Image (cartoon, one colour):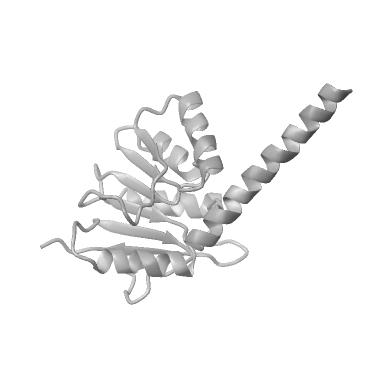
Length: 182
C-alpha cells in the first residue's frame, strides 16, 4: 500500500513539474505549445517546397508534430526544430528517435539567440508577442532567411508576399514572406 501511495505521489509531482515547465516557458515566450492544424501544416509545407534544398527551421517546435511531418515529407532536406520547454522537446526527441529521422535536428535553444543559416525557410506558429520579437530579430544585422511561413499571425511591420486562406472553421491564414538577398 505504501508503494502504491509513493507511486501516486511521484506521478502527481511529475505532472506538476511538467505543467509548471510548460506554464513557465509559455509566460517567458508568450506562446503556448500549440500544434498547427493538418490544413495549416499542408499549406505551410506547400509554401516551403517552393524554396528547394533550403533547410527548414521550425521556430518553436513544441512536441514536434510539424517538424516530424516536414522531415518525413522532405527526406533530403535538413529540418531543425527549436523548442525551449523541456517536456515538448523530450517528446519530440522521442518521436525523432522512434521514427529514425536522421534529417531532423531538435534543439532546446532560443531561436532568437541562435545563428540561423542564411537562405533557410523559417516556419512558425507564434503568438503576436513572438512575432514581434521575431520581427526585431529579422531587422537586426545578420543572415536573412529565404522565406518565413507563419500560421495565423502576421509579421509586424511587413507585408506578406502571399496570404493563403484555409478552408476551415476559422478561415485561418498562412502568411508567406520572402526576403531579398543582397
